Length: 117
Image (cartoon, rainbow, N blue to C red; front, side, top):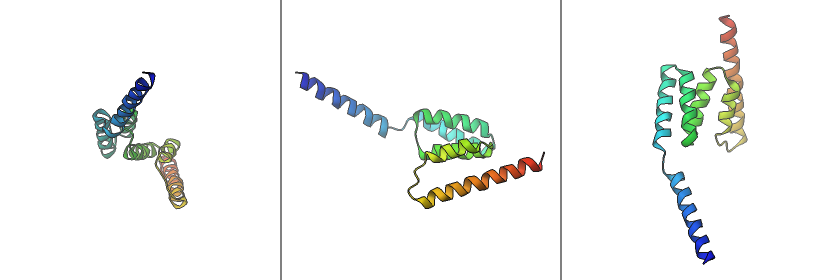
């Protein structure tokens, strides 16, 4: 009897996990879409907030990438690096390109912030 209950419990847990993995969360997806729109409109603080909310329930490479872009445009290079670190990079060349992008972006941000001061 205990064996049947354990098998049934494992089956329910497996079905629950599969449902969460393969069913796209509509609320998180809507936050992602609105955050992406805010990036295009130039509201990077709002975009960062909505994309962070989207990550609570909708884990996607696109969400991490868009949040990284909004953080970069806010001059938050550490947040940019953290979000890019969540993206899968398969080769050392990809990691090198990410590193060079971060360096170039931080220098551009430094240039524009010191030029206008």
